[in-house]
Image (cartoon, one colour):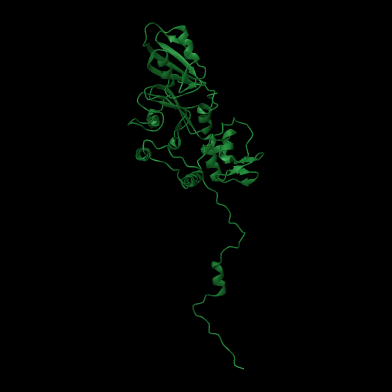
Length: 343
């Protein structure tokens, strides 16, 4: 019987060499690399940018479609269109979670962090739900246990809040109509010389956002913060923090302001078809009123004054909660001290 001999392939690698390129066994997960907060924030931004964009219709396109339709034609409506569901009212802090709430929303409602902070912590791997690592966009049911890594608390404690005496000509938020945002004034050379507590770091400018508005032609105390808890306390739906203003006015109607009109400024006016919350309004001197408000609608005080025949000549915010403007010079800033709070 003939014996068949196989020729050895000279290009073939030894079995030991081939084995080094094998894929890892299924079911064995590689250890998760710990990310920095900056890497987590970048991942969250990438996650948000990957979401499908909303359908935004140009107003000129809408007008052109109406122009094409005949004058006697009835407006067309899709048969399957339904009224948009109304948004759910905000939940008070500490209230029980509803089935299917987003984890970040629940954390915000519980006062643990702002929505942005919660997303950053989740992306960094600092949040666990019932012992399991949380993921971005996760929804949770009732009676879950949420554990926060101590590193998140440490990072939150390092966030700063800045008090600025805003001058006329600067906007509170993003630049608009050629006017710069007030945050550009937060630089070492504009720091109040009597503020000696915290050492300034460039990182303190990151995510620094206004907690409340102050009109471009108004001056006084403006809060800029990195801390979402501070922002929520000052401008959240359930905020009860007082804001105090000195308002210089002049009469635009015959005769002085009556007691009835002064009382109306305190309670009884409406703006944008909504009744205003009660306010405290009194004379500070012969041409200046003192307003204490618990809300902040756009140009609220100026519009209130117009309704009773007053023109605002100047407006200055002097207090927010327990924090006062004090001797802080115009255009300068200082850090919120550890012994200060707005409550």
